[in-house]
Length: 115
Length: 111
Image (tube, rainbow over all chains, first blue to last red; front, side):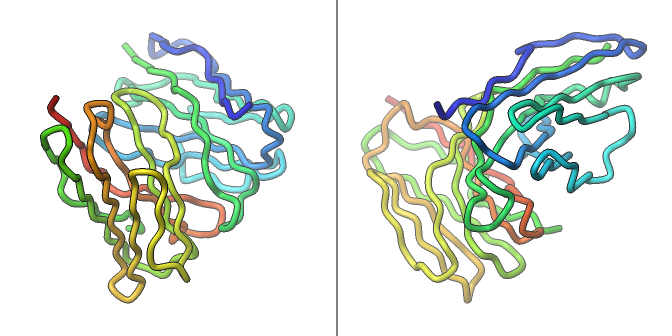
């Protein structure tokens, strides 16, 4: 099973809402990632979890809050977002967060619209 | 920025032709990867080439790496309409836990 599953596929939320994005993998990968991708741009790294601990936060605003409940699950909690946060949010995993084992497996993404 | 630059930004070819995309990066790397993204979907890993390798093949894909010029190329031979997608190079130049994506090349293969 080389699948990374993201839910929901689409999400529309108001600026005062609280919502969560979910990501799941069963490949035994020990590194998980959140990326944000705007239209016609490359994915931009937001967070890296290494062995279930947050290891990289790319200066992401606090209205985005990641959580890794266990080695298979990754959540992104959203609160008080802005319209400019509308984007495709991608989750990925890799065997390990090291140069020799960082081939990334991506989910299909959550298309987020903030009204 | 650690981000790689790719050219061309967009490429349109006829089915059966070859497509070549180029990627340049700024700092030393351990490896370079190529990914493909169909419109609005997740990325799919295509191939990884290590810094001590110069060329690698996978099916209709051929990747070259020139570390002295800090550049890589992806060649897709005998293109098909199904190859229509955006292609990104990615390096670990930003740190061992990070993969940083290039700006991407949007390929259109016309049947």
